[in-house]
Length: 423
Image (cartoon, rainbow, N blue to C red; front, side):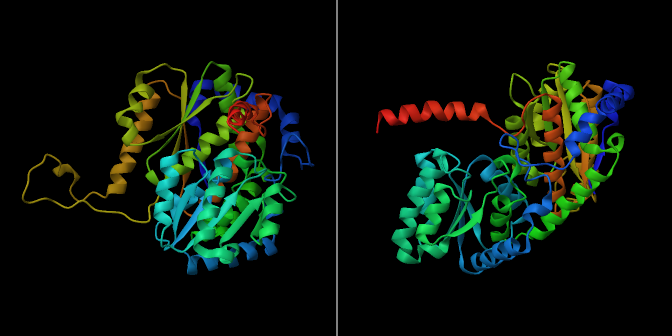
């Protein structure tokens, strides 16, 4: 189970302030933890992992993913934001040895990017998965139109077996799948995009890359049981949400997610979207920023150490790595780094992590630490559910709806007005 170390934040906020807040809001927390009913404004399909872990759906996804693993050279994931961030974080971290190359489309409007993608697909065996909840977003719609033409030119009527559609039942995308014989997977109506990684939205692309999706779900279910079965005063999601809320009340404006394993880069993008899109409303919310250390210590690290004191930091630490390397002596060249001889690189990285926590703490930055044993599907499942639950509680403390995104819709409205001028 993941571990949450928040002692440093208590030193900034005071034990009594954190735990008193929990006690004062016990009735609110009971409501937040209670079983959920369908709500048109608040989407709770993610709340119970079991809801979308049906054996029929798991078998369907695994069978098709096995076909892709056996027949495809390239799997194209078409989606933007919550429709691809979760799966991408898993694939980038865990699917490095997959024989199927996963490429991404529908997450930008760059002509260069789409042309480069089409060039990469030439002569390859290609499958693709279009993911969209309502199929109104321009980026995936444009890419799907272009890639459908490419696939038709390559495969003719056989295109149907190579296209997987993930959308809301009854939506235009669902009808398109039925009319053309594409395999259809449900994008749950009761889950918003950024909370969808533990549904077919995130699970199927991960399975297509050879990742064990049942382990992901098992980790998430274990975390769900932990969070729902423990007292509020000992609950890591509650404590983390309270700390974030109290920091914001005291004028803190930013929270950095910092990590020392590059494999967490795309997970951090998922984390940034989760908190930014859920809490950035009514001029509220901590601004989420991701830092990949030790690289970013040589840039953003300067600001964290000595910039405005309105930021907090959450370190995501990984205890064990799949591969390690021991430094060997160099008997030919004297370079001044002999003190590293016989040390493991993981140990050096861990020392840099501990030194950074100490330095930032000494620089008056509240630093929390989440630790997982290793990066596996099981622990990713735990992290996904933990942060989703925390974000839900944190948003409610801030009196915002963590499940809508009116600011995102504003740019779309202006964009479509402009596009119709050229229609």
